[in-house]
Image 1: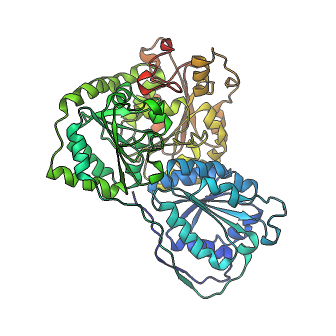
Image 2 (image 1 turned 120 degrees about the vertical axis):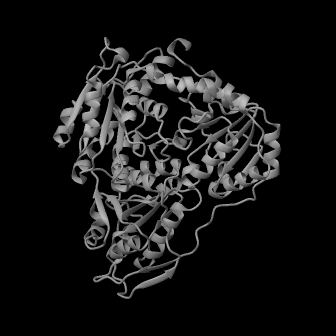
Image 3 (image 1 turned 45 degrees about the vertical axis):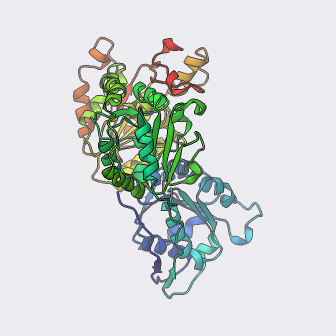
Length: 580
């Protein structure tokens, strides 16, 4: 995974005619950006007028939220910042969900918005919105540009901040008169101020070694920070060396190599029973780049109740927020994990093989048998078995998201992406487009529910325009499935406003966009509930050279288990409906 780094010295080449809009494109290009996603409007017409000849590919999405999510998918797939463009007012506010999602999931995202003329700021002019104020809590940095001359410096700083430390979103708001303003025809050269580096601390080798010697039931929790820091190889070496039970958050999937004896599967609300029990019983928890949010911990006051926690984290603000730690290792995992490895070479960790077998033996059986319970899980297993190991799975939000995560087995660290922290429905379809454009040679599978698919279904037009060979799987249970599951288990089956029985014909809808599709249903008389023609349908679906849709009509009351109820400890997870 490559990371774009803005040069310390930026030169915006001379352009004729030269205005603020041309400077935006020149500054992006000088920083290595070659693809942006956007939707034009009145306040950004000058920007689009200057697009031709900029050397930047613009992808027209059919909604600004689609542009933000597509830019996120692009960034998540290749590591370079994604860029989204929108006009003032509703165009800008339609980006807010993408900004919030990028902040929660630490995605480097630059949003550029148009604004009303500088003289009209504060007058409630047509399509005026205080984008700067609205985005302050959703970004690492927001800036209202006041002059065209500052554009190169602002763009370079924004891209640098988006990638530094814990990555995240930034926003630049540019009044239309600034985009139109003429500037000097001479090349502009300036020195960009250094972005704040990641805080560092020396690795406390002696203290960690002492904790390992005293531990009897250690566990490692792997999070997204391992991927974002480029520390995957180092962490895998650490896991192989320590050989202690290891589990992952949904964003950490793909880091722990499949088939390892120490693998526990995914942790948290819908994690494996073995992973959650191990987290509950551990006496030493090594957290590598995970925020410890409530979907991972359950009731924070009862999370890992007997454990000392060693938290490896680049962002000091994440420390001790949920559970007080014994020891903090602050810094980039690309530096701190290798230091940990060096300390182990000097003094190897104790042998935890007995604990590993106790914790992980049940996990191997659980992971092997998990696909036998529901037709949807069996279907995912068959799709994954056919899907390239270096492909990308993009999941939306809901029951299908958790099923897709539970059955994901690939070793590709960047092979699974989803809206994890924000849980934004409608994420997958545009994000999959961005991922496909970032890695055009990769196979990309978009998994949606019938609810989330309809939230950004207009981006089927973007797929067709870009000729993106995406494979779109829709699990259609005619409900807002995850909400319905909670209504079933905790609200006496009061399925208030979750009935989607009037869904459109998704195959016909895709056909209207020029995308071929098929439908597959459950056969109650067949083993596992899948029709005899399933393999043939899947081979055809995945083998098409262009985009394709498969709709799987799954049982309406199929539920996701295990499940940790709200306010419960990880050890109190439900394994079936009867436990409620």
